[in-house]
Amino acid sequence: MNIFKRLNFIILTWAVEALNKDIEDEELVEGIDFAVGGQAVIEGVMMRSPNNISIAVRKESGNIKVKNKEHKTLTQKYPFLNVPILRGVINLFEMMIVGTDAINFSANESIEDPEDEKANKEPSKLAKAGEALLFAFSFVLAMALSIGLFKFIPLWVTTWMEGQNSYIANNYIVFNLIDGVLKMLMFLSYIFILSLIPSFRRIFEYHGAEHKSIFNYESKKPLSVENADKQIRFHPRFGTSFILIVFLISIVFYTFIPKHPDFLTNLSVRVAVLPFIAGISYEYLKFSAKHMDNRIVNAMVQPGLWFQRLTTKEPDEKQLEVGLKSLKEALAMEKKTGGKGKVAPGCLCG
Image (cartoon, rainbow, N blue to C red; front, side, top):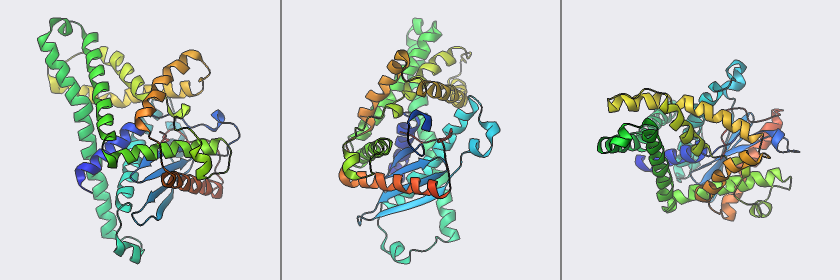
């Protein structure tokens, strides 16, 4: 897989999962043992229980390769970090790191390698070092490309428009509103274009498989392809409009930050405060997840459900099988380790 395609898979995953996420809490779904979140990967699904992660990937041979590992978030390890806003910032970076690692694993496993299948042995130190280097390289490049697409271009166009229109130049709120709208259009266009490409479209299909599998689990019916297929792919708790909330909060937030005459300084400041904006947005998500019965809150999350029509597609039976395999593995690991409770801040949910 070429590096450009891999980078777009990573950015797509960040976009779909980080910007269309919710808080997993067992208190919101009665009768389940553990809260579970998920993420679509290349030809597979990653499921996350409170203390474990399972990634299931369909190989070219038709077999399903599974990777299980224990995972505790920083806020689980260090409870003093579990404070408002800070936990949202931590969640953002943990999601990006775990998501990038899952994409790299699935990219490697989805491609058949007869020699590796025969050997079936632990990777050498050199191979592990190569994987670490690939992870760092792809993470940095994906971050740079994301900033270029969703920060640099919208701000550059808005700054150009400011130079052509005195009303925009004299009204900082309008300037930030245009910047926000351009970011939204850029983001939606990026998602839509990728959804037209068959290999990327399969990510959206596995995203649908993830939702249906979790719906199957929460319905307390036996986990099976037949039962999962009956579920809808639009999950209300996965539909919170994180992307919309981030854009709205950023418009307000940037208005209170003094505008610099230098474009690069403006860009740097806006990138620097992004984690703080994400932290505020995360707190809104926690609030909305616990007040879904409120009409105003319910209306606010509807755009997220509409957004899922773009970010999820109907999966086939084989994709559902992969999603359920990952879910079963995550639940089995959780029961073995005696875990109980919710996916703490840092969850990956789509």
